[in-house]
Image (cartoon, rainbow, N blue to C red; front, side, top):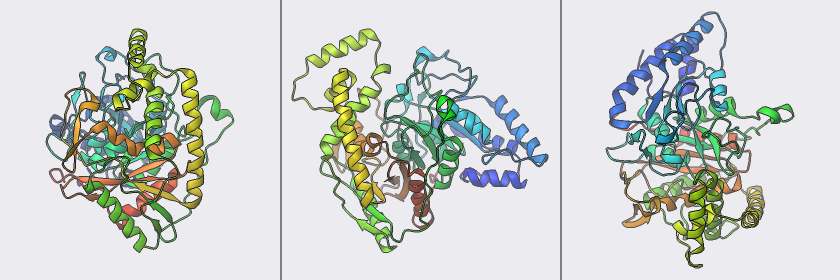
Length: 485
């Protein structure tokens, strides 16, 4: 069997179905690669190889009988550690949850298995999925395959590292603050932040947490845009009580090329900072699209104050995750700390504290403002088909685990910036419940991958993925890290 490390999941499934190699062969290929690369990457942190081998064998027997076990039949894949996989621990990077062994698969995992995917392991995450780097006291640090000492991003950092290194064929992650999109940018792979709630998150949580977090979604990562669509179709749709009455029917894309598409491009903005090596490539893509016949508006003006939008996003994102941020005593301390804040302190640390301790009426007022902004997004997408913008402020940067997240700096064209402030670019789609596909578009002058965030109107998930696929076909596609190609 020739090297399949960087093949698409769709290609692997087709070749297994044609009998070019077996599902068991494909699994063993990726397991061997994982064993060889694990010491340098530490991307996959929990495995159930016996179950995976049984599943691959069952798929091979089904194919031999002439059956069609699903569109992902035989594809070896992994999922983010935060999803339950029966028999494996779900810890979110916390030592206290080492013994939290899942009794059943998360719904996403159930649906992926039903589509024929062979789920053989789980990828590393930062503590509580709350970092743009991926390290925790239980499993250690995950590294980027693009260079020694570089972060793969977070919180789906293990997922993106594993994909870029060719040790898994497909991945599934989660995203509230860019946890799919940031790692996709840093590692040069594709990632899709889904429209809010189209993929149920059952089984993506720690014990005792039943209420899904507002703004948070789950979605796929892959080495090709087509694989994003394949994984999304396998996992989207209502579940439980909702499935008794509702069906999901995502609009199909109405275009097969760039010509005539109304594309808004925002390569940078004074409200934040972004490296020229990122913004220049977004701008270059915009000019290319215009030459292909798209109606490009660059730079576009968005219909709201971007600084106030960012503040609202920080407050509501932190409110959404506040239940899991503290125990009762910790929450009381946080409330006391908030009361001592100067009223004019708008630092990230202060705004995070405010968001974590919002009173219910405060939250309702902020949520009311969010609904107003969602209406403005609806208006915006009557005049534009897509918004293109950065997904992060820079390319992959050196690991830095010292201090609190807002104290860690990244270099933006020679000037330091707190790495957590990159989340500015994630707020548009997250706060608006919009789909956003992250696609690689270039190798920057530093030799590292950079990408573009493709945002569309709510439920236009297949269209943002389609545009990513056109860019992949006609402009730039996934490039393996040189040391592993």
